[in-house]
Image (cartoon, rainbow, N blue to C red; front, top):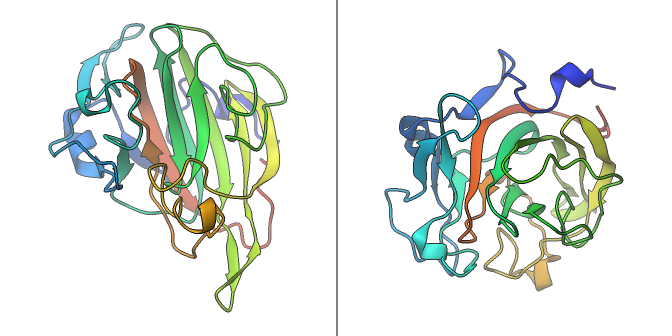
Length: 238
């Protein structure tokens, strides 16, 4: 098991990992773009605002893009320009108001939910519609939270799916999902890559970016980094 100092809020990027977002406008524009989904309504440059960190020093980004007002998911989501297969990901987020909603998508397919005030298979820290976290670890509104994720992409042989994607997730330093299989993309074509293939079950053998969801809520992000790994035949537990 990984030491607790290596997960949770404030965990620094290892030397061999890539910083995807450091609080700066420069890195937002350098590493991210709008996801070109069927419901896209936003236009570059990215309209997510760089704002002061309400808790600590520095700046962060706010996912409340005007194009996604009213919870129009898929209208202004941002995704990394680089695509990934197996990886270790760290994301910090802060929900500013009750009911605040966003989400972290692994490979622009599988959503790890961010939603204040809900606990269940569509609630906070759920692998959406499939796995409920095994304990509650939310720090609450107005406080920073962290997901630390080990992800293994789906495996294919001769073009056919032979192993589902899998993930292990820590939430604020507590292990909430251990090597869980993920069956499909939920939410249809507006949700993410392969969402329109066979009702989301038609996963394809291509990598995908890390996507952050704009739902018209004030959910902030900071300190996002990723390390590409090759899990081979291994599981995702860490």
